[in-house]
Length: 187
Ligand code: HEM
Image 1 (cartoon, protein in one colour):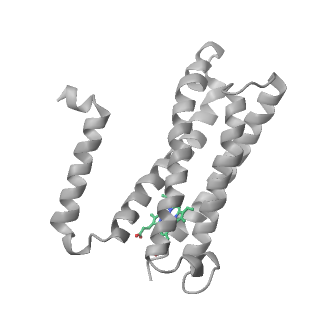
Image 2 (cartoon, rainbow, N blue to C red; image 1 turned 180 degrees about the horizontal axis):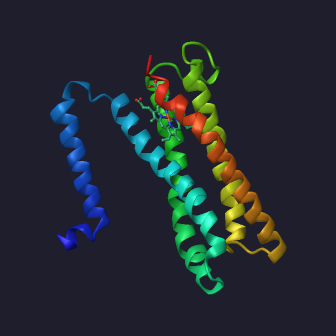
């Protein structure tokens, strides 16, 4: 048992088998491409926004309280790994979300904010802005701030502030984005 739970890959495979059992055992007539992409969309969305909230609720507020000699444990080990799942979670959330909209037949209508797809369109635009911030602002800034690319101390400090501000912006946008996502299909 310890060996099983100690192996993340095995646990994920077991989770996948259980998910397939639920899909084909309790939802067999409705396992369409749309259903599968909705499920994947939520998996990647949780990975992305879960890590966004980890950064904002846990890591950023706790860093100033960590003794200087322990900070590299976060900046050199935990943060780079969290950022990997964070940015790829964002990319796959966008991809699967756009696929769901396409398969649902309203991609263009939603993106141009036409009724009755205005709410999901607003959610999609908010999430697209957030994903843009992740890839083109937060990640490049974090690479400098964490020393993954060369930068002098002043540049590193400015990059850390920039990453924090855009991460906070995404936290701000996320509440409205989540309302739009979960209610687009509710009514
Ligand atoms: C650019 C990024 C995104 C796009 C293009 C997108 C697109 C969509 C679309 C088209 C739907 C289907 C709405 C419907 O039922 O008609 C949806 C549902 C949903 N999305 Fe997103 N989304 C994005 C980001 C996110 C994020 C970051 C989350 C966070 C967890 C999220 C969570 C959800 C949830 C919970 C649903 C409801 C699923 C359902 O009711 O079937 N989405 N999204």
